[in-house]
Image (cartoon, rainbow, N blue to C red; front, side, top):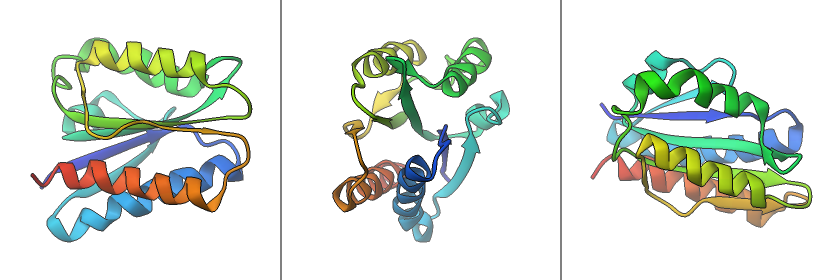
Length: 150
C-alpha cells in the first residue's frame, strides 16, 4: 500500500483550513489503497520519511522564509533520509500574508537536496484564503496522492 506523508506547519485556523483541504484531496485516493499519514512538522520523524512513498509539505512564509517548524523537520531528517527520498513524488504549499519569494526559494533548494521529484506544481497562496485557494489545495492533495497509484 503506497503511503503519502503530509508534513505541515499550520499555526492558525486559516492555514489549518489549507492543510485540511490538502488532506481531503489526498484521501480521495484511499479507495485505491493510498494511506495518508499526517504529521505536524515538529512531530515528523526519520521513520515517517523512510516509510513514505510520496510527500506533501506545507508551510507558512515567515519573515521571508519557511516556518521554523518545517525547517526543523528538514534539519532533523535530511542526513538519514536523503538517499531514500530520491525520485519520490512530492509537492508543497506555502501561505504568506504578503510575500513568499524567500520561502519558495528555500523549498526549491531543500527539496532539490532531497532529490524528490515534483509531482504537481507547488501551491503558492498570498493574502486571505478564498474558496478558490481551498479548491486548489484539495486538487494538490489529490494529484500527489493519485500519482502514487500509477
